[in-house]
Length: 135
Image (cartoon, rainbow, N blue to C red; front, side):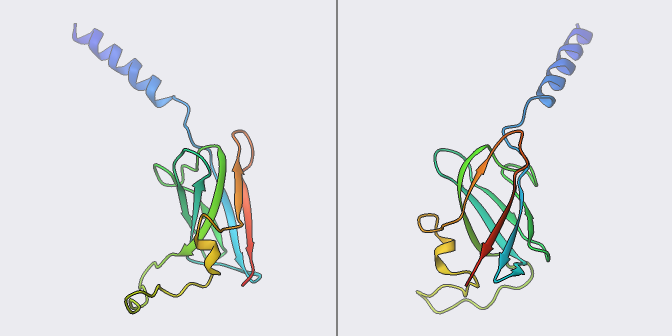
């Protein structure tokens, strides 16, 4: 009886481990005024139902998106992309009440209702995006 339970458990574990992921790899680059934008938070906001995916840029402006686990990508679909600051070590001092932290990106890029940046993620395609922002 234990052997049967073990075999059933092993088969279920293998089937679950081989299940198709809902996400696909998504990478990209953020450039601000012609220069790589280091330490930016990149947020893919779904246009319809779905989960947000986020990533953080490195020194070359490159990012990888994460949804449920690190670097797992995002679900296929259409997204509005927003940009924010990612403070790795030390955030600037908090501003006075009613004011926000300084941002190097124009304000519209931080608002999903106003951001002009969009992305369409497709299964089976290379989903590598470049966002070239001018201030």
